[in-house]
Structure formats: structure tokens, C-alpha cells
Image (cartoon, rainbow, N blue to C red; front, side):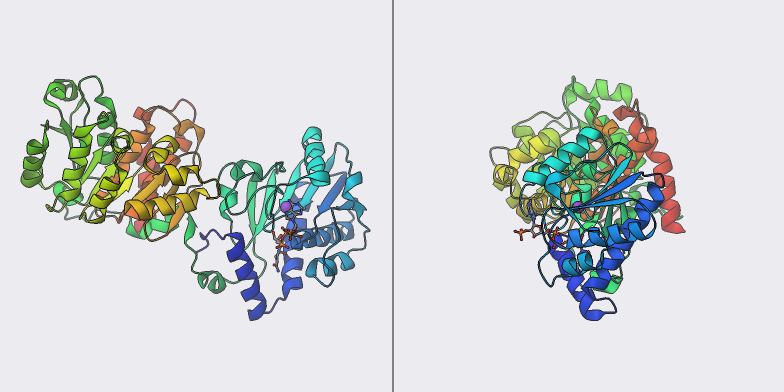
Length: 501
Ligand SMILES: NC(=O)C1=CN([C@@H]2O[C@H](COP(=O)(O)OP(=O)(O)OC[C@H]3O[C@@H](n4cnc5c(N)ncnc54)[C@H](OP(=O)(O)O)[C@@H]3O)[C@@H](O)[C@H]2O)[C@@H](O)CC1
Ligand SMILES: [K+]
């Protein structure tokens, strides 16, 4: 698998293990890294009038010296600038020694239109905000609008969290090594990196596999093996029965969007559970989806005992308050074989005063529990984690999942899915078109649909997030939530083909 996301510490460990295992020593890895970057610069910018290579004092700078040497050997006009001397006897110092160009002090950096910048100031070792000469270089390059190729990471962007630590280069291309880092996918890092190219520098797959990495790119490889494909002998209830709780007469649409998405995901049967006073409104808009009056706990319990549903969506358009809390607790307490509860929107907000009550119920529950908060909802349930600026988004979601005893889908342009066991996945294919009313209701329904078909909760959440984003990206401008269930069809068809192929 090449879907692991390595933290800077894990990457340093991979470097060490690769050096121990051979055949490359640190210098060999650095030469491979520099060669990969030089190749990309030549390929992408064949007409560059001059390449300015900006080197920092660490190994990122070391890669830069290799790039400068190789480009100069290829006949490219190169200017070399350094922010400081590499540590004596380091690989970076050796790379500088092999480079025939004499670096100029970064304090005097200037460049002209037609030039390309190679950013080798800081990579995995960024330890504080970029300032001084480096910050001035970032400003100048940005003012001139010069194309930037970043080595490993754009200087100023944290590889761990994707946060911009002060000024940062905006790269058109970032060349990274062995595996991507979380900062390549997390915002705003994803935007600062531009396209990310992955280069093999001689760190083998078994070395990465031995690291015990817990953070992944959310892509089909992560969950396809668990993706439900019905057998030929199935019947509708074996494909799972999803229920979506509807709000009152003026807010029924959200539950129907969830219901429709659950149906599209492959659930065999879907029921909207509606207050009596909203039955008529719901009935007017439902065809294949069933409808049942559910006004109170007794009616819900009767339904549970009577129909043995497999998964629930609670929250979209439901209203905040005691009824949401009671219904969520009833589903979590159910011993009737319910496979999962997806708590979204108003369902989440209803527990703002008493999140621990909810988490305690989830800890003892048979149904899998999935929470789908956007940032505001996340802060209502986990105010301390939301306020902790030191946490990356995956670490925040991981801690929330452990506390909630459920899978957390922390939504946003860089949605993160985390499980109580510490696994986290960062979604790479989010698109601005998905930021539209009702989009979250569709996502909640999709998760429930996959849970109902027996997919484990973390994998179901990851698959739903990816499919939702993929459908949105393919549809593109003009997308409204009503389009999403239909837009899922070609995505589903491809997944089923991949799964069966
Ligand atoms: N064999 C290997 O390991 C391989 C590694 N590879 C490459 O190495 C890179 C990682 O190298 P690295 O660990 O030396 O870190 P790097 O990013 O160069 O920075 C560290 C230096 O910068 C300094 N510094 C940090 N922030 C600063 C700031 N804001 N302002 C000023 N100074 C700042 C920091 O100072 P300190 O924090 O120690 O005070 C230290 O001196 C990695 O990204 C990849 O490109 C590849 O060649 C493959 C083989
Ligand atoms: K860099």
C-alpha cells in the first residue's frame, strides 16, 4: 500500500531504517531525492531562463545543493542562494561540497520574470515561523508571481498539520519522497503545495509497513475490500434497512435527502420516520422510500421490535432538544440488532450540554456510532479539543473518536475520518461544489446505507466521504444536494467493478 501518510517523525524513522538496511546511505538518499526534483524541474520548466535554488541549513537544503548541481550539469543557468551554512560533517555539507556553484547569501536574493524557484529552505524540519531573509524571499517570489517547485514541502508549511507557520511559499509543484505527509492534504497545506509528485528515493515498502503508521490517504485502496457488493441470491432486507428521522412539517427535506442517499448506496429498504404532523408532507415526496409515524419513544421502540432496522440517521432537519436526545439514546440502547447510528447536525447539537452522557451510551452500545460534525458542531461536543491550537486535525479527530467511542467524520475541505483505535484518514478529493445546503444530509445517509450493509464503521465512513466528494467533483459547478444521489451512480458502478474485478 502506498496510502500511508508519514509524519515528519515517521519519515525520519523511515530514513534511518532505510540507511541501516542499505544499499543507500544518507547521502545516497539525498542524491536520489535531489535527482528526482531536478528531473521534475527539467520536465516541467524546459524553457526556464534561470533556476534559482534557495537552500536552508538542514537536509532540505542538502537536497537543494544536489538539484543545483544536477541542473547546472544539464546546462541550465542556475543561481544558488543559502540562508546559512550546513552543519559541518552533515550530508547537507557533503552535498554542498559536491556542488560546483558557490552559494550567495539569501539576504541579497533577487530574481527576474522567466525564472523558476526551487524552494529548498525548510522541509520536514521546519520548527518555527519563517522570518528574516526567508520571509523576504517568500514575499519577493510571490510579488513576481514566479513558479515555485518545493522540495518535500513548501517552506513555512508544517508537514504534520498543514498549517502555515507564518509566511509560506505557494508552490505549483511539490516533490516529496517515499510517501505523502499529512500536510500535503490538510488545509491550507493542500493549497500551498500545488500538485504533489511522489518520488521513490530507495525507501522500500517493508520499511514503511514496519512503522505502524495510523494515518492514511482516504482512497478506495483503504476500504474497497470491505465495500458491500450484493450476492445474486440477496433480497431487499438482507441489503440492510436504513431509517432517517424526519423533522416537523417545515423541515422534512433533509431527512429525505439522507434517505435517498442511503437507498442509492445500496441499502435494500429505507424508511423515513416522521412526526404525525409531517406525514402528509413526506408522503407527497416519497415513492420507493417507506414512511412510518414515529412521534415518541414508544412508537420508536415498537418499530425497532417490529421491523429490525439496520441503521439510523438522526439529526438532519430534526430540531434540537429532548426528543433528539431520547431517540438517539433509544437507538444506542437497542439490543434488536441495529448495526449503526449516524448522528449529524441537530442530533449533534442536541448533546451540547451533556456530551458525556452520549459518549457513555455509545461506549456500551451494540450499534456502531458515527458522528459527522463540521467545525462548529465539533466545538459543541469537544470544546477543549477544538480550542487546542497545538493539535493537527487528524489528532483532534482521533482524540474525539476515542472519547466518543465512535467514528468521527470531521468535515471540511480536508475532511478527516478517525476511529477510536487511533486510525485516521485524510480525504484528498474534496471540492468547493460540495459546500452547499443539504450536502451533509446526503453524506450522513450514505454512511448509514453502508453501515446497514454490514460495512465496518471506519471503512463505511471513509467510503462515504470519498464517494460523496467524488460525485461532487465529477458533477462540478451548479451542484445542489438533490443532484448528489444521482451523481453517485457512476462512482458506485466503478467501485463495484473494481471490487469484483
Ligand atoms: N536522510 C534523510 O534524512 C533525508 C532527508 N531528506 C530531506 O531532508 C529534509 C529534512 O531535513 P532536516 O531534518 O535537516 O530538516 P530541514 O527541513 O532541512 O530544516 C532543519 C533546519 O532548519 C532550521 N529551521 C527550521 N525551521 C526554521 C525557521 N523557521 N527559521 C530558521 N531556521 C529554521 C532548523 O533549525 P533548528 O530547528 O534545529 O534550530 C534546522 O537547522 C526533508 O524535508 C527532505 O527534504 C531527503 O534528502 C531524503 C533523505
Ligand atoms: K522546502
